[in-house]
Structure formats: structure tokens, C-alpha cells
Image 1 (cartoon, one colour):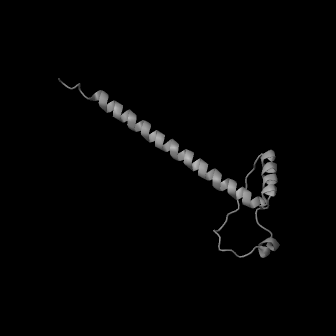
Image 2: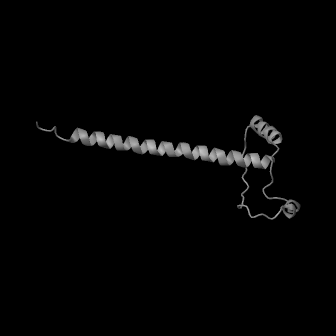
Image 3: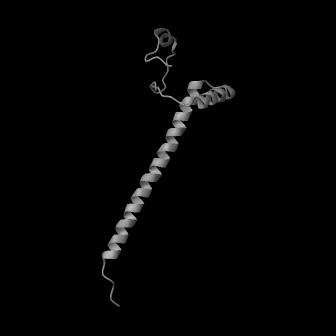
Length: 95
């Protein structure tokens, strides 16, 4: 389990960087997935934190894309219903 705050000795060893400010996030994941991600990080030669960041970034992108698709589909359905209702309420054209 991760502590709520970082120990002072760890903060003192952190290098200065011009990267974006990072936030610490605590959440639970299934143990088998965590084990697999740590094994993958080792095989890829990256730090576990890097692979977890990659999961966040790629997962967020996939989630946002699906969310956008749902919103667009909802709007299209509403528009189709509105168009259908408008067409039903119009009197038939005389010939």
C-alpha cells in the first residue's frame, strides 16, 4: 500500500525536470493484472511507473473516443427522431 505522502528522503532524491506536473493517484487493480504489467515493464525495459502512465494515457484516449462516439450517436438519434416527427406532422403534398 502506498503512503498518503512521499517520504522526505525520496523527495530529496527526485531529479528536477521540466516535465508536466504529475499527480499521485491511488486505486486498486486486480492482482493478476498488476503482476502482468510489472512483468511487461521488466520485459520492455521500462520502469513500472512509465508503463502505468502509458496505460492511463492510452486508456483515457480509448475511453474518450468511445464517449465521443456515444455522444455523437445520441445527437444523431435525437435529430433523426425530430426529423421523423416533423415529417409525420406535415400534411401530405397535393398533386
